[in-house]
Each structure stands twice: as C-alpha cells, then as structure tokens.
Length: 148
Image (cartoon, rainbow, N blue to C red; front, side, top):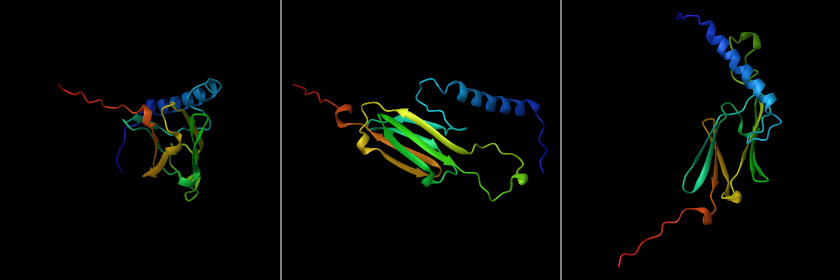
C-alpha cells in the first residue's frame, strides 16, 4: 500500500466545492438561464459548432440509455435522465463516494438556424452526442469569382 501525505486542505476544498454547488442550485433556481437546475448534479457538456451543425457532448458515465431523455420543446433542447446507485456493493463497504447519483436535467436554447426535424443523438463510451444540423439556407455558401 502506497503512503499518501495527508492534506487537510484538499478535503476542505472538496467540501467547499460541494457547498457552493448546492447553494448555487438553490439561489439560481428562480433566475432565467439556459440551464434548468434541478437535481443534485448536472452532467458536464461540451458544445461546439461545425459548418454543418452544432454538436453537444454530455458526459453520462454509468447512465443507462433507457434512463436518458432528449427532447425539443419550444426552441429548447432538454436533456433529462437519472444515474442510479449500484446496489451490488453495500454502503458500509465503501471507502469514499464522490460521484453524484439521482436525476438530472439540463436545457439549452436553440438558435433559429437549427433544423429541429433532423436532430440526432447517439451514445458511446458514456458520452451522449447530440447533433443539431443547421438549416440549408443558413449554411455559409462559397461564391466563386470569375476572372475576366
């Protein structure tokens, strides 16, 4: 067994981060924002844009695909689901539990350039990828210049 130097500030920082997250959830609940902050945890997401689409990647390790719901409602993409705690290991056998379990919900306002009829979602290796294709008329077009 390797010796690890005890650092009491690390435990204090972890506790402070958890308290900040809980306080932010309760204080910001009534404020309008892109995120609907419900539940104890929210999956981390990356959002990027290509020439053809907007892509959202959400980290959802140990979340069963049947427990994930993706829908579009009034120009808002809603990502909802639940990560269930494994009952295989008894609670008294755990040394530490740092991951969050329970339900989550995230929402993102969609720009009008997204073709909502062609949205696709796939899940691989615990990462949910949602592809939001752009409408044809909003894609950039290259105009060729004729030389005379």
